Image 1 (cartoon, rainbow, N blue to C red):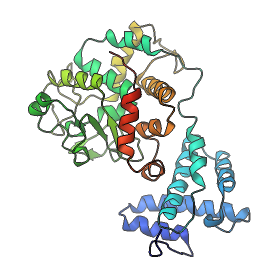
Image 2: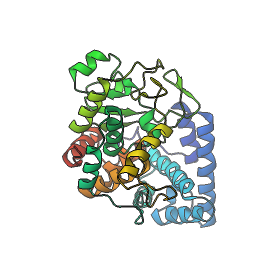
Image 3: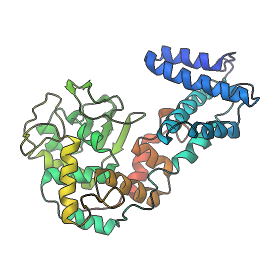
Image 4: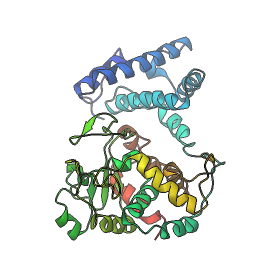
Length: 345
């Protein structure tokens, strides 16, 4: 690191918050970071640690442990991510020598979707399940969930502009397909936008579900999913919304964007037929759209042995964490994914 890149600040938290403002972060976001980071400082002071620069991994681990005494696990994970982003930024600008939160966050993420009581479905059995789904819309939706790990709301929020497909016929029929700038030169890719929130307008349409992601995620599309999407687009009705949703209803709400509830009902119907769903059965027994996310996580992680790639695809990590892995992260994700994703058709 050059001398001009290094910085020496008396108030690292204040410096970080000021830079967040320069980067255009909303005042509410900065306020949330400030509250958490100042509480982190207070915790370090109570343990005799002279500020964030002097904290080591064990001090950070002790702070996370103290949070668990007061907050739910999801809130603890959020606060830990704030601290991790702070350390990553201060390390990148040369104010700190290292990020002691990196290993802490990685160990926290080891537990994602690791529920031993869930129904276990093999890839071969899931392949049989998919083979029984004939309707192009239902097949594309189920394969989309199984092959990408997207949350059901994230899948429903996809617009044509978010979907780049290497298929000339589809692009000719739908000029809006894959028009996001981040998709230039990235065929067969989905763009998942972290800024889509329930009750707020995105691409001119108020959404009913949020994309619960920490960063933009570019999700590879393999040959099987591409074929399913192309087949769906060949019969897709005209959309009611100018946002041009990827998935539209072909039943009572003809042309309306699919909602998470519609998808859950569809999956429930097929799961009941397979003996995988029982009224009152609960998450341990019933196969739902969220179960497909569990299936994706379990099988892809077992096949790749690369938790970083799986966490990225799930949307569980932010830009600063990705930067700790590799500079050509997008290419690495695609290569690892395509080499290991399971066949379901």
